[in-house]
Image (cartoon, rainbow, N blue to C red; front, side, top):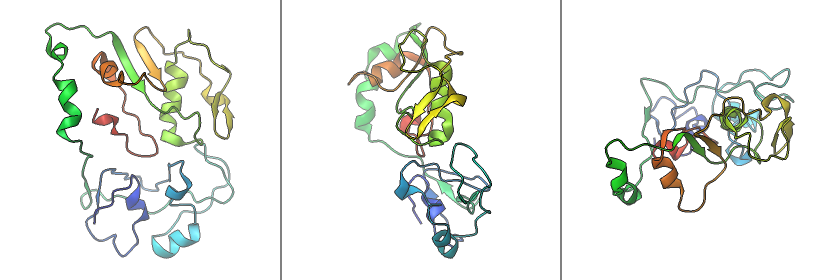
Length: 213
């Protein structure tokens, strides 16, 4: 069975579980959690439906954990991905996606020096719920933000449900040549990647296609 949604194997009904599941996101946590910030993708949204059609749940939480609210939410569901049975098929992009960047003669120039040491551009969780990206993008912003850039607040990291003081943007790991930004100018993303020595590919709601970039 081919399951294309990021956490789609977590939705797979128990009748399909013995089959070979094809997915591009091998989420193999023993007690997985739903990390999507989209309500319709939250496979733990209805515990009763989940237990009837998918599998057993761990008991309700007693308090907040990993940035998610309490209120009787399950600790986790049945395993989404089984190593040795299920198969990960990575996302694919057509040759046209690569043609322009790979035709840049500057990429193959001997001894070429890149101006940026570490780079990431993308959604940083400001409009998302806690737990988006497993908090990795938020932590990257908090630690690698440029202290020279003006910010609305320095004491906490703002998000859709409030502000988190545990992720205050102190920029403590920033160094010249480090860029962690929410976006780049139109048409400049490929150039920014090619000018960087290391590029982060952090998950979002699920798989991040940046691993292909």
